[in-house]
Length: 112
Figure 1 (cartoon, rainbow, N blue to C red):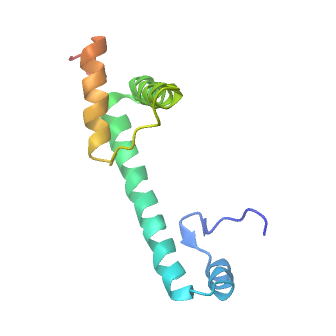
Figure 2: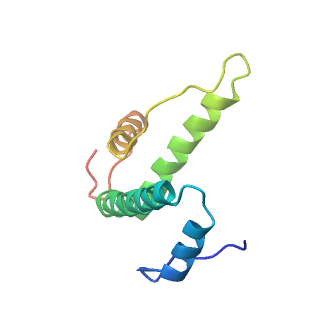
C-alpha cells in the first residue's frame, strides 16, 4: 500500500480508515490503537507549539538539537546498551530547561 494521508487537512479519511480495518484480523483493536495514535499526535503537536511559543523558534531548535545529541551520545557508547527511559511530554520541557541552565542560555524573553 502506498503512503497515504489518514487525516487530510484535519479531516479523517473514512474511506482509508475502513480499508485499514477491513484488512485487519483485529479491526476492533486496530481502530482503538489508531485513534490513540492520532490523539497522542495531536497532543504532541499542541505541546510542541506551546514550547515554541514559550522559547521562541530558534531557542526551541537549539534545545531540541541538544536533546537529540544527548540521545545519540547515550546510544553510541559501545560498552553499554542504549538506556531505556520514560520520556513524556511533561519531561521534555524539564530536560530543555535543565540543559538551558547548564549552557547559560536565555529564553526568548531574555531571562535565564
